[in-house]
Amino acid sequence: MTVGASEYSSGRDTHQCDMPTADSDPEIAGSDPLTEHPVREYLGEDERVRATLTNTRVGVERVDDDGTDRIEPDADYGAVAVLTDRRAAFVVGTSGGDEVTSIPYVEFANVDTRTEMLTRTLVVETEVGATWEFTVRESDALDDAVEHLRAAIPEQLLARAREHRDTAEAAVEDGDCQARIDALEATVDAFRRATTVVDDPDIATVATRDEAESAIADLVEAHLGRARDCRSVGNWSAEAGDAADALDHFEDACDCFERALELAERYPPGDADAIAAEHEHLLEKCDSVKVSASVSSALD
Image 1 (cartoon, rainbow, N blue to C red):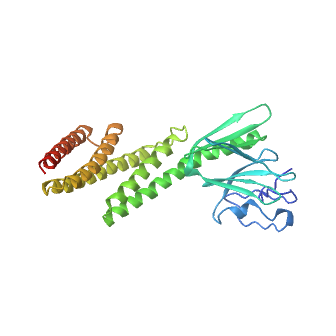
Image 2 (image 1 turned 180 degrees about the horizontal axis):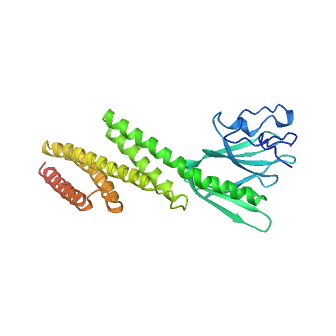
Image 3 (image 1 turned 45 degrees about the vertical axis):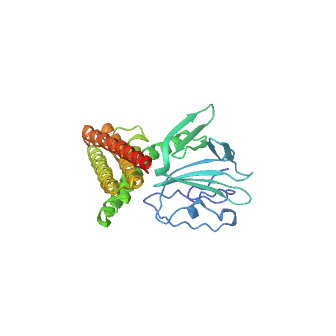
């Protein structure tokens, strides 16, 4: 079976066109009753196909801790892996309709290939621990696909990191400390993955490192700010004689101090020694409140 290049129908092949690229017309006609479900139907209007892979028998395989699940095409049908500018779409044709799986590049954790006697396999690992495998005979096509992925995945992750950074800045304006922390945690994680998911030293440019370091510094500051706020409320509760409430806030503060310390020890921003000293002092305060609460309970 030969799959129509621009239609990329996973059904019987009766219709062929040239593959659309970023410079070609994105509109796909295709009204042939045997190709009524072209892969283009599963893509966004502004989405562009960058690479494709096809097979006619093995389909696509998903492996995780629960086992292996293979989706195979029916006879006279085929399977297509379409790599766009922002995600991978696996489409497997069956007599009952297409089986479609879409994985955004921001969910990719690793990209690799495996070579066997007559075939090669694209191996994609995701952040949730699943591995997707798509086997082909076209070695050059697989090389092109991997080259695209190694460029597109970090690009998408860097874009996602900057989106999270914008969310964090908006949270500052709204005065939402926790939302800021959550967004900055997501920012730092996206920067980390962008520079590690693909083994390419060119990704970690000076500009990218500066962005990541700034986000880490802001995250340390945000955790310290929340820690000190919780500590202040805890101190007030302790003075008011509410030991339980004080300890609750002190525990929240300790969690924030510990995260700030972890970041400061691993990355340049932040004074790890100063943070450790604040954390230790708070732990001593917790012990003191616990002792006072025990004494008060005994006297009662």
